Length: 115
Image 1: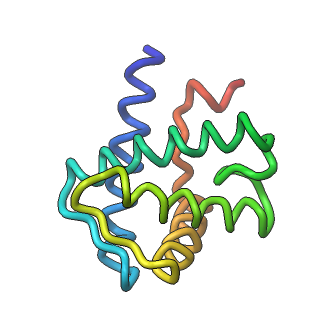
Image 2: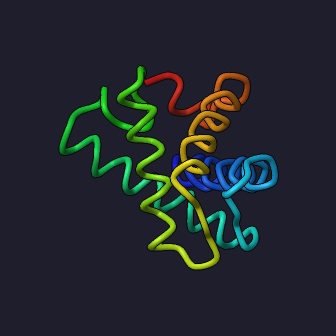
């Protein structure tokens, strides 16, 4: 059941990234598969940042540092995932829009909420 929760989370994240690509200028995604790979790469880069710097500096952390790390992770992910193009301004705007969307539609599963 935990695996299914992760699959659903990545699919929802990919859909959010597609919406962000539609809203934010200088942020484009080639299609759903690119968005799904981008969600995976963002999760992996966020996990690495959390391991190195701690939870407060990850894309899921709070405050300006978490926001800037989120934008940096989004910008760096474009070099790993084909079909994604992001400028620095686009990454900052995308981090802002993703943060706003996450307020209303948190990308977590009910299984993780109980932890």
